[in-house]
Amino acid sequence: MSVETLATLDRSVLEARTGVRSRPAPVRIAHLGLGAFHRAHQAWYTAVASDAAEWGIAAFTGRSALAAEQLAAQGGLYSLVVRSAERDDISVIESIAEAVDGGRVDRLIETLAAPATTLATLTITEPGYALDADGRPDLSNPDVAADIDWLRRNLRSTRFDLRDAPRTALARLLAGVEARRRGGADDLAIVSCDNLPDNGELTRSAMLALAEMAGAGDARAHLVDHVTFVSTSVDRITPKITDADAAAVAAAMGWHDRSPVVTEPFHDWVLCGEFRSGRPDWEHGGARFVDDIEPFERRKLWLLNGSHSLLAYAGAARGHRTVAQAIGDPAIRSWVEEFWDEATRHLPSAQLDLSAYRDALLDRFDNARIQHLLDQIGQDGTTKLRVRIAPVLKAERLAGRDGAASVRVLGAWIAAARDGRLPVDRSAETVAAAASELGEHGVIALLRLVDGELAVDPAVVTAVSRAAARFAHP
Image (cartoon, rainbow, N blue to C red; front, side, top):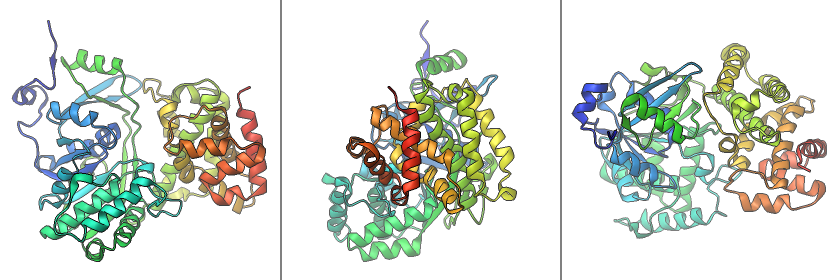
């Protein structure tokens, strides 16, 4: 007997089986970066909000249209598997009203300009912002240069020419904001949900710089007066889906899902900023709104993401594939604790309950039923180390300490770069060129990609060189 698919099930049947509404919610949120994390986090928070029926998401993919194709065939519905150490809890998430190929820039601009749309959320990953080390649009990136040329021509024109539409996320977002200005829609909130310090302000300054570079004074003024930028700290581990996960959903639910998502029970969302035109009741799912996001950002970036980078490079060097395997290695577990000791010296302990947070992280890492691959975590390390590890090491150096635990992370990464073992990195050519230099010259060249100050500190260069030698494969 054939098993039904989520794409062929009538929505009224799903309503009877799972409580899914007979019709999707109206689109009021535009999202850039339709991936597993968005579906386990922002889309889930929106789905469980008390006013969920009023808030539909139009979600646009990034580099690949596959997720949009799979979800569109299922009416935006997908199964969320919440995997604890004991069991799986599966629900159908219905907050994505439209799943759209990110190449449909026309549809994105239309969505952002619509009066019903009141906010835009972003999970485009750190490299997706296409910024240089100073947080400005990276003019050495050909896509950025091409987009600035497009913005220069089109933001002054009465009509957009989308035959060569913008390629980068922030340029596409700026085009949508300009279309919104021209249409006279209400104020918009832009909510960055990527692992970057002060991500809302970073997005704001980058978009203002794009408008300036394009000579678009009206667009820039509208950004200042009618767009708010919300900073967030986001947290929920979401591993890559496997065939076994899809089979488990089919066995449990009685239908095939082309695009299920697996995640952990833990979830956290802290937001800081203004929503002038409304937002969902995300508090119903546990979201918190604060006046100062920085301590929460640093706790997440350093303790979770920083230790993830350590696990990714040191764990892979010692033959491990997953987080659970790596944290089960006594040596690596002690290295994680040592890194946390360094990082927590520079966090306000009373406000953040750091001891409990660390204990919870170990419990999460130990959950072997979450197959979080080290190769997935280690991708785009150049950008990630810049915000996860470099600030801790610099703070330790400023305090007169050697930062040995932070040095160890950089050493493991450099060893992987030199041995050709790094996961995918959008800066792969630059990393390879730096790694090809001999001796400490290569260490300096690689450190320079992460942080220029560290690269000119002789003590750091020497310490990182020694750490890299310990992780090098013979």
